[in-house]
Amino acid sequence: MKTKLLYYLRFTLAYTHSEIKGLIVLLGMMAIYVLLYIGYEWQEKEAAKLEFQPVLWEANYKAISPMVFTSRKFGGGKESGGYKSKVRRKWVDYGSYKSGGRGKQHAIDINTADSTAWVALNGIGPGFAKRIITYREKLGGFYQVEQLKEVYGLDSLWVKENKALLKVGAGVYRFLKINQVEWKDFKHPYLPYGQSKVVLAYRKQHGAIKDFEALEKIQLLDLVAWKRLKPYLSFAAP
Image (cartoon, rainbow, N blue to C red; front, side, top):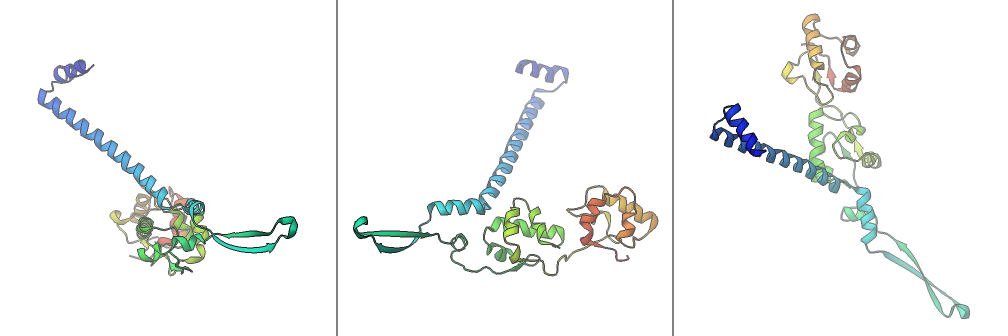
């Protein structure tokens, strides 16, 4: 098989001996790159699983943590043959254990909180803090707490259980100025590729778009995507 391949490359495609060697090296490097990429993706997913698993952590902690005992003895009489001990078990609170006994947690503004503030919350490590802040910057701010569920690897159960501590504050802090922005800056995580072209073409032909109702009348728009994007839109005149 190898001989036939070499014959094909050398005599059919007119490759020189040096070119064949170079091709083999190139293919080998490409294969190594693919394997490294697959390994990196797998490692990222495994790291995410280990970094954020509050339910699993709680289960493991309960399995290995020391118990706090309170006992109450009572007389057993002749029938019991003396004293018996009744033990009531009380587990140390998981939140206090993980936080190192921090006690009560404080609410944070999810649109201004830095890494330190995020890490202070149970179940959030430095990796997740960085991921949340990066996604927040791409969006231009959160307008509702539920958007945190969109952060890769962040458990929706965590968002639900910690919602009381998560405040939106002033909300969105960077808007997509639909009547001013140029092609290179007309992008947003919620905006499908190609939708910006539709709006730019319409704007070039008809001028500024007055409001969202006017935007909805443009043909070829993905209205589901644009309604999701609505809190980030600004219709200020150029």
